[in-house]
Amino acid sequence: MTSFCANNTFKGQQYENWVAKTINFLESTAPYLGEGGRCCSVMQSRPELDDNPKVLFLGYNADEDFGYCGIDKERFYKGNVKGGFYDERRYTYQWRIWKKLYDAMDKGAHYNTPMKDGNFIFMNAVYFGSKTIAQLKPVEKKCVSSCLALTNEVIHCVFKPECIVCFSVSKCFDMLDSEFSFKQIQEFYPSRKDNPSLVSKHRVKTGIWNGIKTIGIPHPSGRVNNDDWGTIALFLKEQMSDIAFQF
Image (cartoon, rainbow, N blue to C red):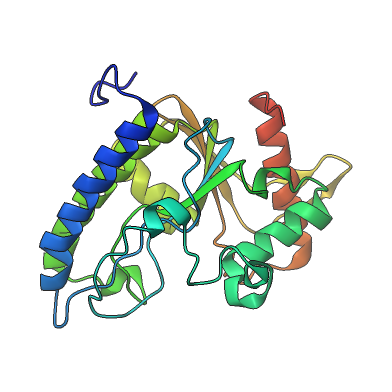
């Protein structure tokens, strides 16, 4: 168990404590970041508290350039219901960040089980929305480390996934590596075992974050063609098989 994790606490109670701490941080910080404050987005999916999730999908922060509009505690438990994550909109281009990867895993790798409800958690590493990461001003960046510490805590003390998939190498995996010093980092351009000449034009990275395999892939909203997505999906399937995923 990671040293900062509370001992002898039920998982549900650990999560409840983390939610209370996170909301207190956001309510005391977000309204005062820049003119009008910053909107907050933590959980996209429901937390999986009955069992450890197989995969935790991690975006860096939400593409939401809005002012502060309060904290929806219910979203920490039900996910982004109002935004359509739990209806048909998840599989349309309203949720292209999900649809592109889901289609690649489903059609390219024939392996969509990791993206089925109950097997994954989807959340942001930094809780303040912005149009671009560079848009966060210096005063706001001082709060980013606090978000990352909270994310580190909930991942390693509460969720304990079998692996983590970062949406973006440079803007998620690398930033988390800079903060937490991943081990055994590898970088490469994946190819297909059945046709080695098919090599992705987009790099991926793998590393170990406090004992959990962590994978960086291109952001699903980026300009990646279907062939490359198919190759990346097969790479993810292979990585998940390497850590003995049992669905």
